[in-house]
Length: 326
Length: 202
Image 1 (spheres, rainbow over the protein chains, first blue to last red):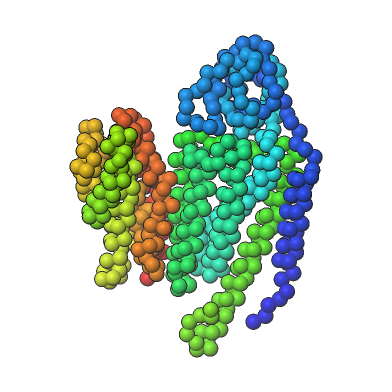
Image 2 (image 1 turned 60 degrees about the vertical axis):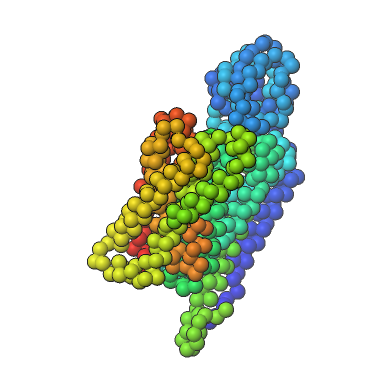
């Protein structure tokens, strides 16, 4: 059996490292994020209803306005707080509030932070992140979460492909992808609460759809790894793991649905591009690219190792030995 | 299996004794969580023995010799286990009423139906998982490890929510949750039927 120098994967590894380092460098030392101030008078009151805003700047109100601001960070269960918007505003800087009533006639600079960028599509852009620390965490959190989703998607596809074709390389790919995905998911799920503590004021929210779904994914694929470890026979293992991966994936959208009964705080996927400030886009793209390449590298090496192991097992079996090579 | 349920309820009763005595919590607030955690474990024990016994006695192999679709065998296992668990649900309800001295605010029958819908959710995913776990080395340990992540948010959470709403008299929202549970049961049973061929194996 011949092993060639894995030039291709070495290049991938190098590209991954460079990309991640460049992205993180830009994130740390790049230009500071522009702070967008939104004049409430520019916006129609109805556009703000239901939008999550974060009051972070200095604000002043000229007219007396009443509106309902629901405390969103501390205890979401408390009844909406009736706030009279007159100077001085009884709002705490650095906390999240949801506007549920109508606000009008407010003038002055309110720095808005929206978790959903979409309702602000009125020519006014809002920055999503303010806290400088939390924003740095995001450069690791979001790319690792993306890679984890990608990895589990690949696991589903290779599970289906294995059940259709019965080719062991699909099983190798699925296993390698889940192993790598669990590592990335672990990073995402640990950096997430760190970010949330700073940004939302709470580390974890059980009623957030994205959080719970990611948590379920993480648990399910940990269980997948336990299942793999408990099955010795290659074909049986491949078959059952593929089936479990498929069943597991079915529960994911349903977990999401059941958690969606309660709102999500996350920026919705697909909208993030529009909502992210351009200063964040470049480093973020680099880090995402880097982590994706890193994933490809790890999975590629892992699949190759599995293939060699199988060949070795086959050779050992041909040589009349029993059992595999440890 | 019934013994497991009774013992679990007893454990919960002891755990909550202080709270109940102080009046810090009433049986109505306790019921959703206690009932569903008990039923989850009762269902796991029922599933575990349903497959393990068949495998040990070789009757599973006999079933697979049937000139029938594997999906039919899977559905048969599902309905068999469901019938058993349906009785156990009723028993769990009775013992809860007994241990916690609570009459379910006259909603006993509606609650039982909700328990059945939720149990169907546990079992539809559970039958496939049990068919997988029974073939592993430490099978009795594997079943909960594989099953609980799948049902935690899809069955357990809406079931507990629905039960709480039902007991609070909010029937409409309770059925909303029941519909979600039924949808999951149906979805998981479909996937199970389709995958039965691969999982039940040779």
